[in-house]
Image 1 (cartoon, rainbow, N blue to C red):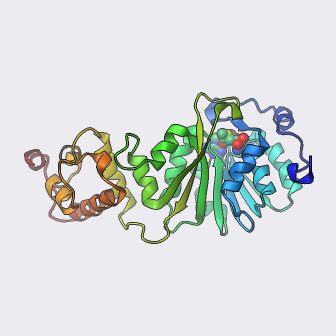
Image 2 (tube, rainbow, N blue to C red):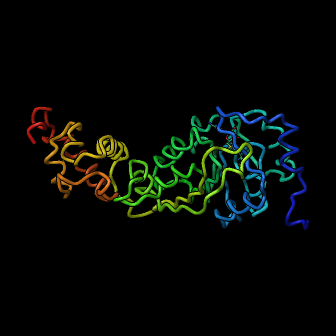
Image 3 (tube, helix red, strand yellow):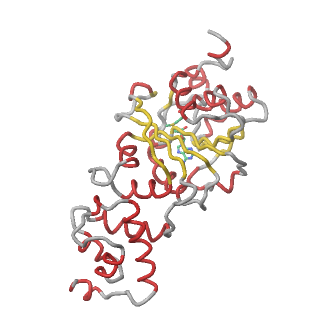
Length: 297
Ligand code: SAM
């Protein structure tokens, strides 16, 4: 083994045993032990030189160590399970002043609370039970955001939804929210056997790069409302599914340049942005309809 293949820290299996880290399902704990794989994930986020990486859920530190080996200048990690802290402190000693360990729930810690200075890259093997709300929170950050990319592990099924194109079965609210803000790419799959313990499902690494300019200018809350209404009844045409919104459905769809008979899975991201913008305008003016009026449409 060459110096490039090892960071001189103990093997992860030993670290996990020493910390008594029996995996907890409630914390989405499936650890990656294979250094080739964690380094591949870290390389997907390259270049790391000069970057500050935000890692959520470092656990015993397999990915953290790979990120340092691939050149990360600084890592800020947020971990909820205090049993992981001794392992993380050992990494911090091996990389002095380069690892900030924050113990806490990442769902309750905003990007602004972490004192991150750019360029920032978010890289994480996310706990599955909170992966989607974490991502949505980062997508709702002030725009342009502090991060320049997110390289994240999701369940394959969630990854497919994130990257889905209009017209596909998996295209839905999550696809619109993610692609409104970012270029989304599914990079590669990771088999269950790569994890300890092995989950039941395959995972995928997804990279999201913020669209800095030209990101359509609708309001995130309006976009959430129109996508929730449309995909809440995804088999129905827009003229039916959007009736739950408190504006005149006909005016909303026509002013967004869409056909009332279109189904939500065939509306592209720009189409949903137009709906969100028109929804905001109509709601704020004379377009507010009663349920009776919408029933007539
Ligand atoms: N990064 C490690 C790896 O790749 O082996 C561990 C990944 S494991 C899938 C998810 C990690 O997230 C666990 O260490 C778990 O304790 C942590 N975690 C779970 N919920 C969390 C939360 N709300 N905030 C911060 N960390 C959390």
